[in-house]
Image (tube, rainbow, N blue to C red):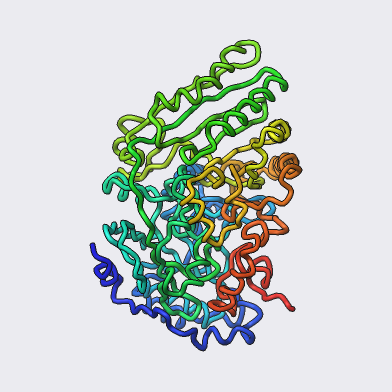
Length: 604
């Protein structure tokens, strides 16, 4: 499909490319200091809400969380069924009043908006933005709903729910508006699409690769704006680095195109500046790449019988990574757990199975040589490859690798509604604690490897330590590093070999529901353990930043941690396109101007 055909498909919405910022934005200094809540005198009347209903062609709905029924006396059986459904990310995603994370203890609890516009067109988004601005409402945007920090929900707010804006269109020769670049393969994606659908369209059907996220039910728009990592980021860069163009509704209600040639400042801000702060993205166009012939994985779980043995194991892994794995071909995760356990779940491309086996065999031989005295396999080593075109094909995975995925178990659910079995734990979960830190590549120098191994072992005695190797660009392809350098993300990512994540979580829970309340004591013990564990790594990398989408809700220095020196430039973009602060998310650009809940502007 040609690009002009895509534009025609957008329901006739006018494009305001390059429109000057209007009078609504010029009101910034005199904007109201407190947003209205449902019971305030300034809350819109029923007649005003009906105007929005008409403007959005019946797509406005009053929101109620399904969980409220359990607080109000629903039967134990029906509540038990509901809490089981909270382990299905598709059920959660289809419910306007739910989010994929139920709560973060002592931080936030998922709370539905008062009203939501279930947007299907850009015109619906424009109507909702104008209504929120003109009525001084707290505005929330939700696509996939995968926000650990609660950025896609708020009480007494108007939500723009983009889940139905999920069109996916492949291009053989895309040229961004106003640019004279050579045409290139790309894919345009609606803001509400999830990555599993995009991979199926681009890779299974189209035979190409698009850089997205690892979890199949994560929303495309949120991940791209956060920066966005997938298994092969070291080869292809972040998702933000692959953004070619975005359509966005800004605070004045204008529909703008943002790319390298048109509104380039806004385009830069959207590439890693964090979703929900600069406007409502309605469509993104991403570069696609030649698909590798094969993708592969390395799997094993090893336990050690003593601290000394575990320290040797971790030291061997660090040495292996520094010597053989620090290159564009390798990604994914090794987890070090209390109880002296190492889970290896690595991915690779650009190698056949025998080549990957040769790289890992010396490591596994050393483990085998010290069995059973020092080590035992809970899961023996397994190295496998798959034709890359089948890597996200739901039918193929169900037939040949049924243990890798779970299916949406609701009656009549589409066959393509699958998610990775490894993501089951986080469906509907309650976060107890969560911290991350980029680990600089200098820690892999021979003289520093011992200190790194010691710190990793000390941290893992307190809480699980996940090393996400694909979430650092050190060792990556030069093109990937250069493209990511041009985004708004903290430059620390360029020098990091991995993102260390330490967290704790519990099953779905809801305050006030007997038998399903969060375990506060366990949560606070976990939070203390996570902080103590991360302190071990912080001593080695005290100034390292972290990732906007996966970080500590309570981080005190979040501006520097997320964006480093780029934050000042992001604030300039924010003040240009949203000086009145219509768009607010927790620890988003400009959020320091507001109270923690986003309702009151702070005096200055």
